[in-house]
Length: 545
Image 1 (cartoon, rainbow, N blue to C red):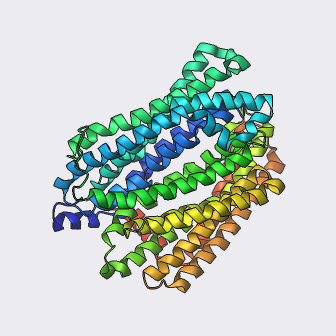
Image 2: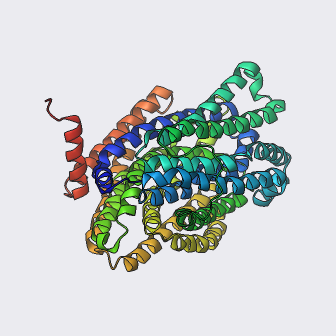
Image 3: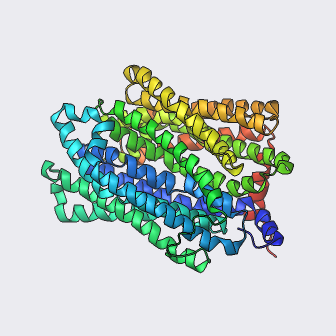
């Protein structure tokens, strides 16, 4: 939002690194609690029916909470894109109107989800009805789905509110908010462990465990919404008032971005349904996908927020054709920062997958065999970290340009591609094949989005972009091989048993890989690396005045 040209200038001048630092710290705290939550779930439920069921039941509510209600989701992106260009006095009536409209629609969705929980679970997990354990898993999933149905309504309110806070230069609360969801799950599992003690692992308590997971997840979503209401009121962003002025200026503009962006995200979720359709015939596959996803999303979520949150308002302010040269520089900046962060992390994730899984999860109900399965899925996820975030950067450029249709059309085509790749890859590779299919779909999306943007913005300097990206790929591969070599050498000397031994080996191997990457990448003389290093020096080593 802006009050005046000087206010706009102040916002544009705000340091990208400063915003990124706020987002990074808040997101890191949220991800740490998310990791603790997943460790607690692994210890209590392993890859058993309660958590396997939760992965199926959480698909729709989780999609709504993470994508619609999350930072960089379609609701958040639409609100930021529109409010960043409008005066501050327009914000409250506009947001109250959008909240009313979205609230009515999503309340209806919540009711439908509750009523049709059973057929929806049967639709995308038909393989659960083939065995006695599968039937038990399905029944738990249906119960969990009904409990979490109100998250449809909460997700829309959360996404709109966080978009409004970001548009008014408030980044801490939206980034720290997911910590609350993790906290409620930790409290729920902790309370169950105190009450049941050793009986927590008994088969008759599976349904209770599933209910605790579902209710604590719902409580976390409710808490995320409640904490943002006072912040919005203090900032003049509107409150809980119902407003039905759907024709006021700005509503149409938000809807024009929000609707295709939501459908585009929905198309992506159909890909998740497709994966689970094939996974339902593989024992423990859904659990393995869930555990591996968390390990990937921890660093990916941090860097995603650090890169996307500051860039989206900048993209929006550079949407005028006169500003497109600067917009191209910002796009390059986003893609290069994505490569510099994601490519080495991908290489290290793949090299250290098995010991990482053992350190984080392997205790109590989580066995060594489960670690092997989750590690294989994690390796496949590691391949796609760059293309996942790179695609998101490009999608935000389209949103900033007011074009939500192009990403939507690409997502529709990708549904068929993903289903075909799932069918081809699940037989030879099992659960990792489902992830490989997703990686290939994201790669295709990123290439097509670049092609469309190249036409829309009258050409990119492909050589200037392509050569550094290829160099970063090669350097990251060398760093990953270095890390893998150090890991195997330390295992030969120290063995591979004991938490502290594994932790020491992963730290040594990871540090070696990062040092190799840093030494080699500094030789590329990339402007993005230079700028980042200079700003870090200014921030942390500036002289005292």
